[in-house]
Every structure is written in C-alpha cells, then in structure tokens.
Length: 168
Length: 420
Image 1: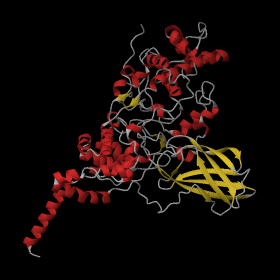
Image 2: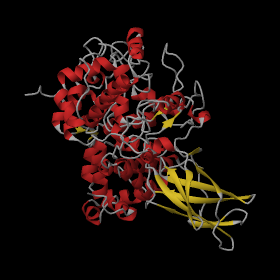
Image 3: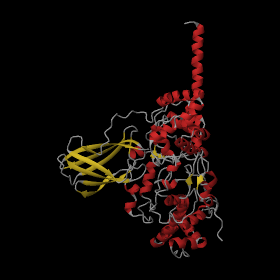
Image 4: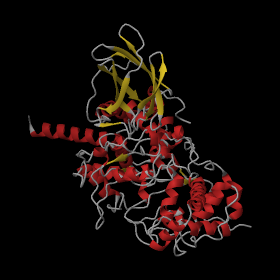
C-alpha cells in the first residue's frame, strides 16, 4: 500500500508536478510550480496556537527544582494513540541514587487544546531500583503533549515535565 | 499613470489571477497535512482489539447465533422489535430518525453499530464498556424491546437451545420460571423477579448475558469500507494526480483542507474511524421536549454500577484486563453534558445528527461548530471557527466523501437464512 514507507518527504514529493508533466505542459506547469510554492506558504496551520520553538523532547530530565532525575520508558513504540499502555518511570536523586517509596502523581495535558488525558493513569507498582510502573495511559490524539510527574518522598516534592510529540 | 496603462496592468493582474485559478494545483499538502491524511486513511484501520470480557467474541458460531438473535422480533414485548428495527443493515445499521423507536420512543438517536468494536465505550454517554453489555440494554428498556430476562431465557430454551448449548454449555431447567420476570420497569415483571431465588436469578442472568455476547460476536464483524476520501489519499500517496482529481472535486479537497486545518475537526474526529471514541461537550442544544441530559456524567455513574461491566461477574475478563474501567477518569466538572464522538464514516448517509437528532442536515451541524454557542449545561470545548459560508459548505462537501460500503461478508448484511 502507498504508506508502507512513512516518509513525509517522500510522500510530499509525490504531490509536486513531475518534470515530465512540466515538459508536456510548460505553461501550466510553470504556473503550477510557482503556485505550489505560494500554496504551500498559504497552507493553514494545523493548530491555531503556536507551540514554543525547540521543545525539549528528552525522555530523561532533571525535575524543576533539581531534586530528582526522572526518565520514562513506554511499553510501546512509537507511542500509541487511542490505546491503553504503560510506562516505567525511573526516579533517582540528582546524585544518581534510586528513589524508593515515593508517591508519584501523574498528569497529562495538551497545551494547544486545553484538555488532558481521557484516562487517569497512576503508579500501580514499585518495581525496585527506583522504577515505578505507570498504568492507564491513553492519548486520544496526536500532537504535542506534556506529561507531568510529581514526585513526593521524605517530605519534599518536585515535578518533572516531559514534552511528547505524538504522530497522528 | 495613464488610464491606458492602468487598464493594461489591471488586465494583466486579472489575467494572472485567472491563470492562478485555472492552473492552481488542486492540492498541495504540507508534510504535516500529509501526515494527517495518512492517519485518517482506512488502510490504517487495524482489526478491532480483542474483547477479553467476551470469550466468544471471535467465534464464528457465536456470530451466526448472534445474527439470528439480532434479526429476531420475538425478542420484544410485542413481537415487532428486533435489534435490526433500529440498526437497519441498509442504513449503515442505524434508522435515520431523530429519536429511536422501539415499543416506545427513546430520548436518544440510534448510533450506528459499524466499527463500534473499536470503541471502549458504547452509547452516547458511554454507560456500557463492551458491545455485549451494550446489546443487553435495549432488550430490557421499556421503550425499546420492552422484554425481560425470563422471557428471553424461555425463548432461547425453546428456539435456540442447540446453538446456545454448543457455545455456552447446558441450559438450566427453566420450566418453572415465570413467563415474565426481570429487573425492568414493568411492576409485575419486577415483582416476579424479586420473588425468584438468587441462584435462579443468577442462572437466568447468565443466559441473558450470553445472548449479548453472541450478538456482539455478530456486530464485531461490521466494519466500514473504503470511501472516495480513501481513494484520494491513496492517489496522493502514489502522486497520481489524475486519480486524485477523479476521487475528489476541488470543493471537496478544499473541505478536506479545512477539516484537517482551520476546522480543528481532527481534535476529536481522528484515526481511520474519524473518532477518538472519547466524550466532549460541544454545546449541542437540548432535544426539543426532552429532559435535561447530563451525557457522560450520568453515563459514568451507570457504568460503574453496571452488573455487566468488564469487572462484573458475567465478564470473562480478568480484572487486570479491564484497564479502561480501572483507569477511568471521573472528573465531573468536565464530564457534564459530554457526548460520544461518533465516527464520521458514512456520516453523509446518517442524518439527522447529534445525540437526539437535533440537526437535520450536515450544513446545520457544521454551522453549529462554526458558531460555537455556549453549552446548555457544563462548558463547550468549542471556539468559533470564523469560517465563511463557502468554507462551511466545502466542509459539508468533504464529509459526504466519507461514504462507502460496509466491509463485511455479504451474509452478515441481511437477515440470516432460516436454519436447515
């Protein structure tokens, strides 16, 4: 089928007038090529709000106040849309010691759409070595998501936020 | 500047504009738009997810049994109503009227069954979490089939014993059961139900649940087929301009561009079924003369106490297989008056629209999304789209390109042949 290859570039090139066509219908092709450029420039953005440039997509990061180094690993790749799945969240201190017995609150948001996740994911099990099983994740649409994990242990708390860009 | 020169420049500009309009490529898609087109293509529709709560979901014999039940009018209070009365095969398994009519009239629009095996939630308010438990609701509704559990158990014992027992094991002896009993609105049937012993009630309820499972095995086989839109996406993928032009008109292409762009339609109508199978408040006006409808908010409460949900005793699933129910979001502020996002496959064939058929045409429906009025209850998630009349009409034109056949063996699309 046409989309076995998932390359946007390749698919896009199919939409441009071919050189053969240009030779056959010079005038039309010239106009078309000119307009292809104009048309591409005039394409409506998919989202009304601009997302910040250069979003950090790292799957490991320091929490906002620098208390924890947090990373995640989904059980499916690429991240599925409209399907329940789980992540393993790894939490360690800034000096690389696994954090055990933490309370982790999970939240998901689409900043461009003003809505969150359709489910309420939560940590269901501590797996040892600073690893927490997060179950019940389901993203109902592609685009930019922000997943926030609030880690609380020993009377202190900090949040780690991850940007995700889900393919439609 | 001399008038002649001005006229010449004007003519050149007008000529240029005409050339632009005549020779404009019908569709130039940005990489992001192409990605959106691909995501909607029917070729990306996977087989429906397994239903662990129904162990006969993929059993062909169960589907055949379920099909016979689906078309059997004896499963009703007056012998006149079957599942197919509202879910009509020649109307994409819906009925084309605002409020469903069984032995009475409901408060909601019949939803199409086609493709519903892909959804974790059934009904406009998601009060059911499987196709089989959905099928049971109308059977006991006083305005739909209007029947009751012992009536159905007797019917199966008399007319479907062999099919039933081949799938679900021996039927209990139902000879001493009341003719009519069940947890239904009818006071006599309800009283008879309450007089029955718990064990007897459980045995009857098990048969009742199994009927739903057989019906679901049938419904699971009904999937949407390819539409002109899908042919267009395939042509785009091949770079076949001729096939693109043959598949969609320029107006339909313009509507498609609006659908994935300015219209913000993909926010809910995504994936090959053009639905995220989720719930949203889009400020739809109340149905005329109908009581207030809290949608998902009340559906959630019914779901959680439903004896036929995934965690219930009649479900075949292990608790850990009931993820959707286990991780259900129950934030009541957002869920007030949310309704399920229907698939847009065949939407052009399915007027009237919305959960109580409030809008007679697609044009009215698109106008609603364009205007984004405040919700009668809760908060609408819509923002005005600022589309011109032409743009709104183009979206309607595009929506009509989503029509196609039902993808299923022909034998599933008509009443079953009587048994040999």
